[in-house]
Length: 274
Image (cartoon, rainbow, N blue to C red; front, side, top):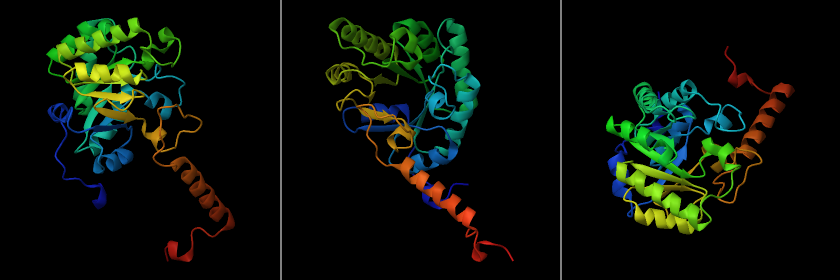
């Protein structure tokens, strides 16, 4: 059961609410992958939680997002939705689950929604997944699009560089954002693109645009939980700000605990049963 201070009576954030926030109130989103962290996030001022396939890196230790499976994403998302009563929860569709056969894509999206209780799914890509997106949206499943740097296409992109810098690439990204908007996505994530392009996309489309490494003019921002809390070690891209240094604090606590255990001062008499 959630601790008392973590309970929230705030109204549930829906896709409709996110749309209402566009242009009036910035949307704060973070990634999250477990029940305990989601409880804390849900009791905060966070509007949306993305159960990202970045769990492949942060939770499972892979070098890329590609290895994570549907089963693993379902497990992580279930943990988060058990905690989230306020935040809008978006489940990432993992690599290979929506590309290719449109009917299989629909089947996987339906499974994700039915088995996790998520509020929406997130799907990387534009034109190449358009038919799958139409089927999924037609089934009444809210979809969050994802353009720019799409980590599932990292081998095709050749790295994690900024996308959309030249005029042709910028025009293509804008046109794909418009297509996503036209078919009815609930929001679009823009990752690692020039801020001027992100601003143009945000003003052009009717749905909320959530940025990560896309400058200040999008409708909201998303950061990876472990990154923004300073838990991730050795990772500090230009767009990342640490809002805490929990990695340092966790190391201090672990060392203090180990020291007291080895010295025989933990547990004390007061911490022991008679």
